[in-house]
Image (cartoon, rainbow, N blue to C red; front, side):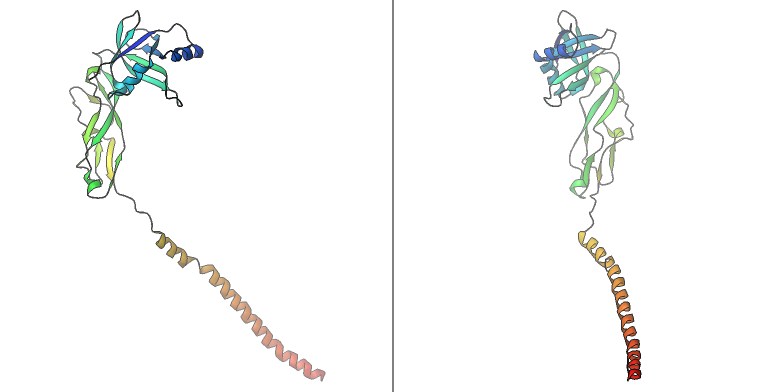
Amino acid sequence: MATFTVEGKVREERGKNAARRTRLTGLVPAVLYGGRGNSVALSVNAKQVAKILRSESGHNTIFTVQVTGGKEERAMLKDWQVDPVSNNLLHVDLLRIAMDVRMRVRVPVHTFGEAQGVKLQGGIFEMVTREVEIECLPGDIPEEFRIDISALTIGKQLRASDLPVDPQKVKLITDPERVLAHVVTLKKEEEPAAEAAVATETAPAEPEVIKKGKKEEEGGAEAGAAEAAPKAAEKKGKEK
């Protein structure tokens, strides 16, 4: 595993303007706290911190903080802020680490292989949980958990309890029944032709009622005309 060192110095000035000036020099405001020591405001090398975040172990990396005029201390990245536009670091929280004290961390879960449910059954592989929480000594923190999904078929799931955890060194904090990944069936969309057929069957109902009413009206009008014709003829005869 690669070793990292972050150089820094004690920050004398505070506030937004001071922080802005610090960033212009290639440093980033930071705070070192935890353990048996007091909280210390620092300015640390931004490139060195960014290199740690890009490493394989990422934020779980244990590194040395070398403060000018002070002692070296072991630490981890507890939190950090990044500018959403420039993607530059704005602030970093550093947590002191005691190598003989167990701690809780979150470790990423990665899969490898091709699931049988995808290859042979036409299913879809879904990653549900991408990291789990564990408790262990700092020196036993794994960079990642890798798990083979080759035997995964449709309807089968991989759970946190399936991870290759050494119970002698690592305690799984995440619920063992938590689903990490599974293979599901592809949902079939309803065919447009079927929908069109249903619409065709139901649509004519109202026009038929209207047409029927129209015929009844026309029939009533014809009957009325037939009754009126004899009366008109009778009236005409009387006049003569």
